[in-house]
Amino acid sequence: MTEVKTPATTQAIPKVAAAPKTSRKRAAPAAKAAPTEAKPAPASKKPAAEKVPSATQAIVADAPQEAKPAKTKKAKLIRDSFTMPEAEYQAIAAIKKRCLGAGVAAKKSEVLRAAVAALAKLNDVDLMVAIQSLEVIKTGRPVKGGK
Image (cartoon, rainbow, N blue to C red; front, side, top):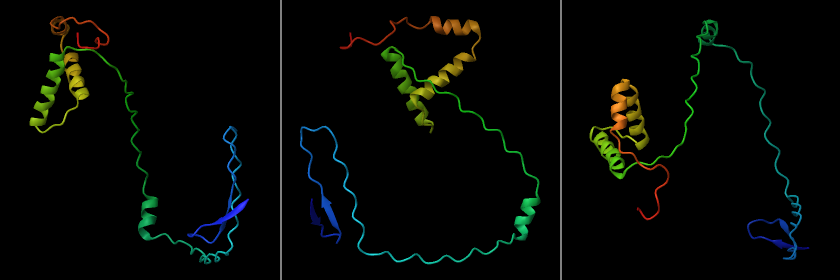
């Protein structure tokens, strides 16, 4: 092994010979050289003084503990994909622009969730009318090339 001195440090760093390129095994890492200069001993810490509770701390400690509100679990999010006609997709963009005009930024998912919430409030007859008024489309991914 040969030693190389770097200009940034005065330590000697051992240079490890490269392993042959045909070998798949890793060469063992070289051991670090011990520093030549001794580090100064850290300043001794002062012993911690005994803490005396202040009057406000004593009052707070004696106060009855308030019950913490129960943590509510976040709803599990589900990722899904769907197919829709281009006109309905553009309608989502138009609704987003209307929301921006009113000062509310809405995402596509929020627009769709609002639509689902509005449909959920309909009675059965109105819901069936809304669903039956939709164009029936072939489900699945569209064919490449836009046919």
